[in-house]
Image (cartoon, rainbow, N blue to C red; front, side, top):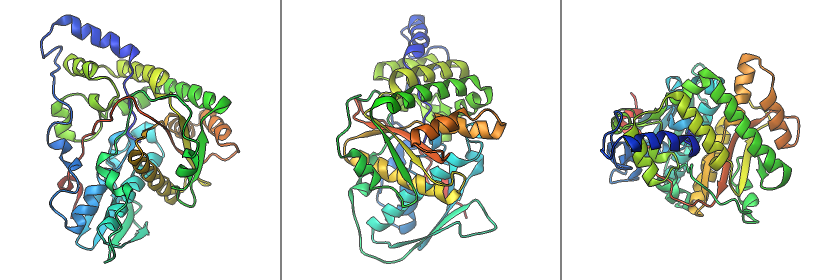
Length: 384
């Protein structure tokens, strides 16, 4: 759900300019720094030494996937209860005009918290949207006593990262579709795209949707706002997308850090290039959809499903990357009253006239490792 990748073709031109300036560590206002360094990455040392119930649940939740790593949540926590709230100030603006992705991100955090609670024998009881007068109150998780249920999904929590690099384009394992479908919530439908015309349509239309986003000034700027260029940016915000999570090679990432922050227009060009050359190559593409696309409970279910799938994929040595350009364009078309091109494409891919596509991603075997994204700590997300 956190997806603003940086491409290879256009970025090479930007980086070559930086490299030509000098061999110094500082170029054009940029400065080199190591990957995964600093306090922004300490939450990944999960579960740590503090095993209080609220710390265990919240600590797992903040490691969940979210759109552009916005982490659009805050929580209220006691020893026997954790309440999940959406934080509208951390939304993607015109990239998520209906707050669909924000709500899916809350579902991801909720699923991580539930898995962690069960792993430590806390027997969680879930109530969705418990406050009728507070739409931001997504869920209450009451923590009773139970029997520890450790499983591979829990073990994958501190190792699950979005991968934006190159994947093998070979056919997927023959049982992959069934394995993913078994992880879906009851109301979530999974469409598996791994061959033929539909795979070509998914790829070409995702590229076209990316072009439309880059051409839409508001969408371009709202996405670029979550790019964290420097070590100082990362430590100050502890969210967003970084060079180290962009899927580029180590040498290219180092030069990118030294070159300074690119303009939004250059970033859009890099992302479009990466979409063409890298992000639309994989063993399979997956669409998660629901009967009612606007239903927030359905969006939470999609988030829980996606998080479960990504954790399972991590446990199996598979890489995953969200590719939500088409549903983002569908939302934008709905908000602005534009021709519903993305809606028609998604209906074709799903195989019926429903417009219920909620979450898209690619899955396959990676050529490289996925690096950690910065995370806000417990003290930043828990409020009285």
